[in-house]
Length: 140
Image (cartoon, rainbow, N blue to C red; front, side):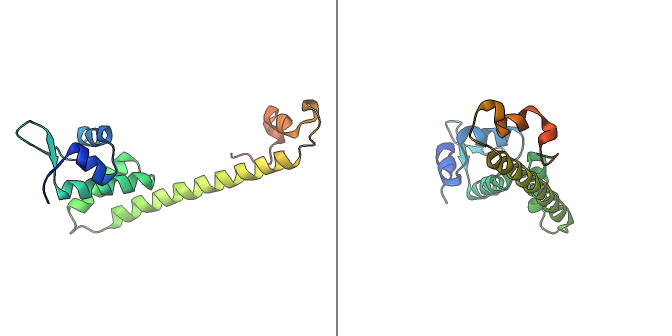
């Protein structure tokens, strides 16, 4: 594959140019080679690394977790316990977020169902927002 400019790397990887520069700055992406005009040129392996980072970010992994996962990927002879632990921690975060969102959904449904469509002085939405003790759930 012919080396790509940062513009072409951004287009191919789906990662914006400022984000590519940021990943380079924080060390997730090694500094790419430069052409005669001192412009970055990206290889196929750097595009694969950008795709890995983009996918990990889309799944909600934090930068430090991605850094660790990339280090593991760079040394494939290691056990995958650390990668498993990182993924399990992320899954736990997602499950907690889902539980929180379900509680929020329930609370909002209750508020909407309790609305009598009368005046604001009788509005269940306003009552609940004004007094957290009126909520069905503590964690939302």
